[in-house]
Length: 245
Image (cartoon, rainbow, N blue to C red):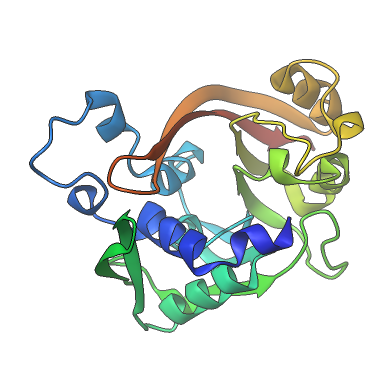
């Protein structure tokens, strides 16, 4: 699994997914379905499920190339972004330092368009720290957080229960957890014996219910552009939890 997210092709797709302007993802000149347009901005929209107000610490698990972590920094004094992909983490760290990351949007065959990702306006990159890590085996001294965000991560883990078991320790009492998952359980990522034994939402309620109260449930669509004519247009289940105590 590790190599899937290290290629330049996938890195470019995620930089476009996180930082591409609407007209870079869906260029003018075509009558794109309205639903594709509303599916843009997913890494920003999932962070919008946290309650209003400022907090001290935020954690973005499976942060990819960092857009959600940067959005969390608008209301968190400190944000830690963790991803298994060293390529993703390196790109996010460069953006946090104020750099620019050039990438190529694939049109078809060998035809590409050069683009660049930059730190979103109004974000203080010094508040965000990125590190490579495994969501199933997070370092012991990570501490606890007021807000934890984990988008499109759970169904890409080989042993997702290891993350669920760690979450009560990661979220401070009264803190918030926002999880998003398209529930696309695949044996290439997760052995079948580790899949939920029922609907994912019911499994989450059963496994998290002792430590968390479910505060909200929603669907958020997202759009990942692969070529000028090929897109991943998917719906992700979003659950919002508040830590008991």
